[in-house]
Length: 222
Image 1: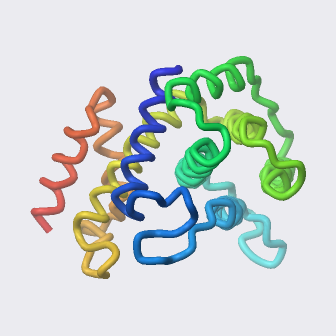
Image 2 (image 1 turned 135 degrees about the horizontal axis):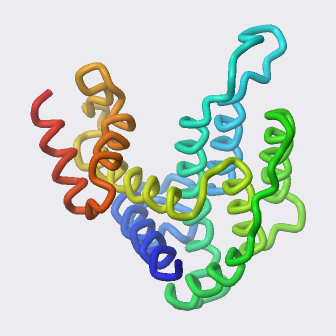
């Protein structure tokens, strides 16, 4: 587990360095734009709630979209990792190896807390959001994220696999015109997220570079 946590920390550091410029931990991109990872987290968590048919005035018989719920959790994890890296550099100053060991210790014995219905799952998400603003402590907050994941049937290895996929897809997007608005997100009728997940499903042992190359091959055929 520790090696996978370390890999994710390293990949997130590299992605943030490349996207926002070195020194992003100080709170600004290399273009001078403010960065607020906690705002990113609670807005993504709100999107997570939108995967549930909570609205009493529509989609009354709909079911939660658990496939999308897992994707949204992975999106949140990108921002949680970023906040971990930011706080660690400015306050804790541990090596990434030490940091990964501390996270591993914190989440090693978490057990899923199954909920009786999706309304309780939503309340769990809302409790997670509250932790951003009430007695925030980085490792405990990270632990609460994994408690949320496990309760929503996203185990560590699945999170890792999806994170690697989304991280590489984000890198691919940035290098193919995402910021400039020229990137094509729908690939032959499928969103790029879906294509990425299909590649992972068909090649569970694929390396990050092989995944990038597979995305490149698919994108070149549009």
